[in-house]
Length: 217
Image 1 (cartoon, helix red, strand yellow):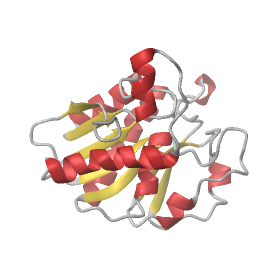
Image 2 (cartoon, rainbow, N blue to C red; image 1 turned 30 degrees about the vertical axis):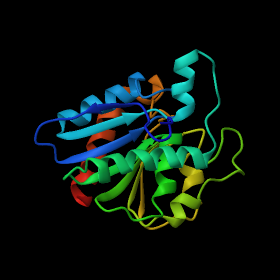
Image 3 (cartoon, rainbow, N blue to C red; image 1 turned 180 degrees about the vertical axis):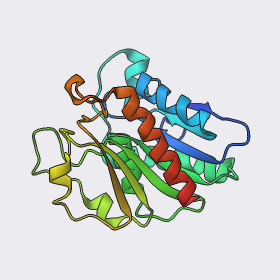
Image 4 (tube, rainbow, N blue to C red; image 1 turned 180 degrees about the horizontal axis):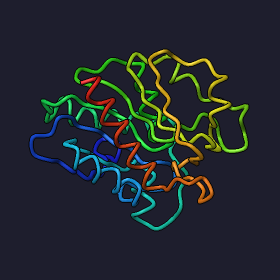
């Protein structure tokens, strides 16, 4: 069985959960990165079960210690779809399901959102990569224009991969909601001079994420 058939996963399940969130990592960090762990822990406290997984290139990195670039988008999509099949078909959850991820992982989930999956109620993107860093002309708007699922985007307003001023000039679906974090970067982290802290923004992100799940379930 290939990695695409069965990605490595971490299941953070809670009793009496109200939803299941399938949470994909970003381009440079795996499913066990502290950002992923922190979000999963805080979501568990709010009654949301979380499944984290690695894309194929990341499992290969961890296996032999070499730094491989991300797989091409069709492989990333196939990997995510194989995981969806696991929780929607092979061992289906009775809970409403939400898909999403950090940066690249959120982009993959948004790309899948042009299809309607039974039980999948919405998509959540933590720092959507609207364009590559320093390449604002290479826009990645198609997933946000073609979606049939509601999408919540949690975005730092000075994110180098899509800041507030730029995003507000883009045309995206009315199904997309963008929540901005004052002075936040791609990880939602503000500068000290802003008067905000990273943990404040993370807790606000959890509040918005839970609110979205409650509304769309």
